[in-house]
Length: 82
Image 1 (cartoon, one colour):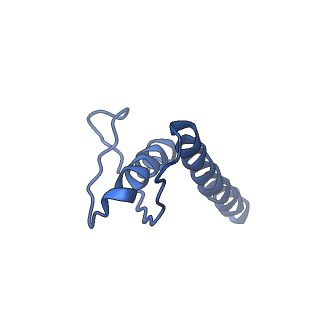
Image 2 (image 1 turned 120 degrees about the vertical axis):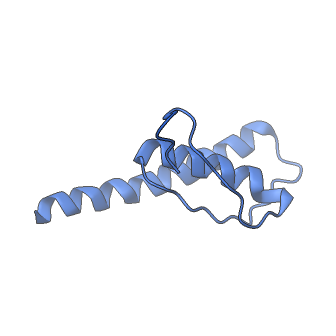
């Protein structure tokens, strides 16, 4: 969720934590909240056991790029309707 007092530090709260995926979901949610300036609710069941840091970061990058692509498409579509 965007932080009105410190925009560079989005707020996050884990509703249900499975340790293997909570870090991934938290990272993705914070990035999305910061970029969209909207609350982001992220569920995740990804397990990166045995993955390198680079592989995990690539997963974060792909998730964020995919969601942002859809978000921007919908935003443009909404602007065209007005």
